[in-house]
Each structure stands twice: as C-alpha cells, then as structure tokens.
Image (tube, rainbow, N blue to C red; front, side, top):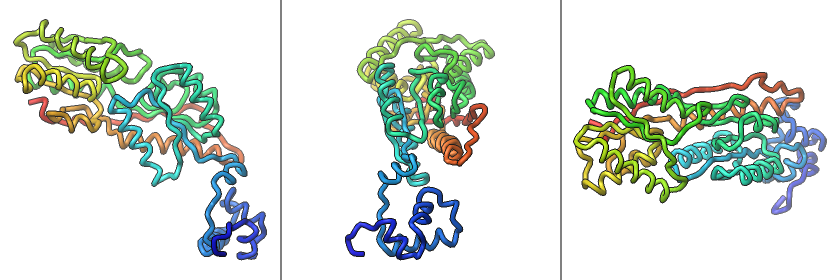
Length: 341
C-alpha cells in the first residue's frame, strides 16, 4: 500500500470481510470471534494501518481521555502523585488532561467544563474546591484521592495510623514535647485524621503537645515565611527542650529542616523531625527526612484500577453503575531516616 492512507474499505478487501465487520472490530471487538479479530489484527499490521484516533472518537464517542484536577504542584506530594498516575499510560493506554486549580472555584469550574467538552471517560480529582455531591452530578466515573468523597469513589491513606506511627516514634525517642504543624483541616477531609491520630496518641501517653494549625501559604515563598514564624515561636516557647516535630507533609518538613540548618548549621539533638508522604524531597533533603510513607505508587495504581472498573462498566450496552461509591484505604509505612534517632 506504500504511503497511502489505509481505509476500512482497503482492510475489508484485504480480509474479505465487510466494512461493517471491520467497523465492529474497532468499535465493538467483543462482538467478533477471536479468530476473526486475529485475522483483522494481522491484516492491519501487514497493511501498515495507522489508527485515526479522532475518527474513532467521533465514531464511538469514547475519547480515551481521563481528566486530572490537582490543587497545586509546589507540594511535592501532588507532583509525585501526578507522576505516578501519568506513568500508568504504559499499562492502560489512557491519555490525561491535567489542570491545576490553585483552589480557585471559578477556574476549576472552567476546567470541569473544558474536560466535559473533551468527553473525558473518567476523572481523578485531588482538589478540594467542590463537594463530592456536585462532582457526582456529572454522572461520569470519578475517583477522589485524599479529599472529601461521600458521593464518589475514593482512595486514601490511613491517615490516623500514619499519625500514630509518627507520634509513637517521637515518644519512643524521648521527646519532651510533641508539636504537630498543619493547616486547619475540615473534619470531612481524610487528612484531618493526621491531627486526630497525633492528638489522641499524645493524650494516651500523657505527653505534652501542641497543635500549631495555621495558614501556611499557597506557594514556596509564602510557605517559607509562614513556617519561619512557626519555627521562631517554637524556639521561643520551648528552649532547651527536646522537641518532636510532626509536619503535615514532606514539603513543610524540608522547609522546616532548612530553617533549622540556617540557624544552627546542623540538626541539634533537641530536634526530631517527621514528615508525611514519602515524596522524593524527603530523601533528597539536606538530611534525609524520616516520614510516614503514603505508598504513592500504590495509591495511584489503585485509583486507576477503580476508575477503569467504572469506565469499563460504562462501555457496556446496558451499564450498571455502582449503587454506592467504593472507598479504598492504603496502609502507610513509616520510613526512618536521619531526622530521628
């Protein structure tokens, strides 16, 4: 056939099948016998056929696109989660349309409208902007990661267990006071359990503790300045006491560690640090940071599996959507490094 564009008519003539049968191979392959599917597949290879993806979308309405909406990329957890989700292309062959919402409702609404216009087959959402009830009203397969998800499927870390692991480690290391640094978190968000697990563990062991829940900024510069104030408050409030600091994520932990090094040129014995996520920055920091590992790769894989389960159901002639959302929880793993004894 040379460089000529191969058409359905060419394939039909080559295989002695009808054009209708060739169309069924592309749009409803399970309607053909395995033997006929193999004959057509072999013909496509011999003819040098290159599939017209746009034509396929127009023919069957399936875009093979999955939307992703994340809050930001400056927190290393989100960038690593995105990396893990995108890498699933080699396994599932879905393409991704990615938007960063920056916690802006008007912007996120534009993104949702744009994704619907592209006829995405499913959506993975990590932003907290819209409630799950609104997202469910779009009637497409959706999986939430680490956000409120009463009305949609979700995958989360066992945040409570992770916080208990962090607090227990700091207590075993004989810290005199434990401090949790976080933003104010709604009780509906899974990450609230990091606060609850930390506080309950301190109360159980009668260890002095403080929750420092503050606005910690929305980019590196504002977060650095906010954590600088937190660091100065801790220095002034707990001088000469061994302090166990549990930070809400590895980005915060890395900035806090840098602030300590800026003042002392080292990590003094009176400081123990534990982050959360096990994103790459935890291991790449000036001192590798002890952290509660979220098993980000496993969360991403589980989210894709849960999304594909729903998308495959929607492709059936008579789909039966889930009657109730499925919620998966992944066990965290404590990763000990140089910021704890």
